[in-house]
Amino acid sequence: MPSIPADVLRTFACQLLSAGGASAEEAEIVAASLVDSNLRGYDSHGVMRIPSYVQMLNDGVLISGAELAIESEGDSRVVGDANWGIGQVQASRLLDRLMEKSRACGVAIGTLLHAGHIGRLGEYCERAAAEGLVTMLMVNSHGAAVRVAPPGGKEPRLSTNPIAIGVPNGEEPLVLDFSTSATAEGKVRVKKIAGEQCPPGWLLDSEGRPTTDPNLLYGTPPGSILPMGGDQSYKGFGLSLMIDILCGALSGGVTARRDRYPKLGNCVFMMVLNPALFGGVDHFRNEVAQLVEYVRSCPTVAGVDQITLPGDPERRLFAARQETGLTLDSENWQQLVNLGEQLGLAAPSV
Image: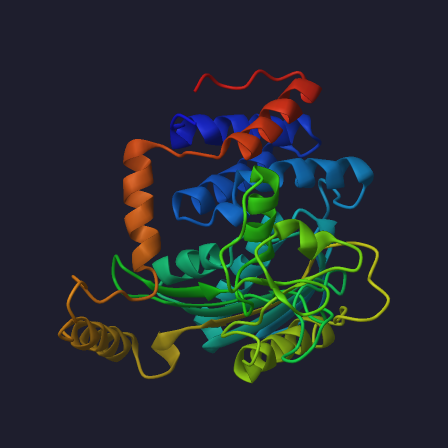
């Protein structure tokens, strides 16, 4: 596939979402979020999501124009119901409220249930870091999808349950963003659509045997994604278990269960911290800067040019892809072209 300029892809994504049932404001927010994910190397959370989002809007799983309902609120907390609104829109509204509260109280914690897929978690950390705030964010699948088997197990029991932590650091914030599984489910879906095999170490078949076939994850019976760290990683699976509780149980939402919840989305746990009301902004900024410098000064082994910290790979890819454009595999691109044809939209020339 030829390269597609980011602004061209963003415009096409916005047109698809608008024609597919999102409001103009929602389409702009989501298109920007998805293309930004592609730019930063998170293709699993990029424009490949658009066909499924449009399908969910058409099926009434997602509700355009849904209000963020505040079920309970205090000086430093928000308990919200997204009413099956578009995830990026509702999570952004929650973040805005929490950032405001954290400036006054030092810490603010919020939860959401009934949210559509909120996208790349690091995006919210980056926004907060630009305001000088620290974030911790995690989601589960609202009890609707399980993909990860426990160590020694043959059947999936948890979703991929990602977590992100963001720390301001000048123009180079530290943003740690990862699934607690060996890979994000969206990356397996990208491989499936593209007709490609997955790398070894991602998947098990329904008998618990290693496989590289992405189709087996979605089979009957289904395969599973390995926990972060491999099939003997109690740490990776244990972290995922705690995330499921903080997101699903604490929010008033849903954890993983035998009887799947009928709608796929996210329960959300979000925490925002204001360094000014803890050790002070100057102290925080200086300590983070000296720690980063100290770690980066570590001598490297042969073949390694520099020490990589959280957020570095995303910034490098962002700069490169802004310059060269974005390249999608032919099958994922064709899905967008086909959706455009169904909605009466011509795909941009590439």
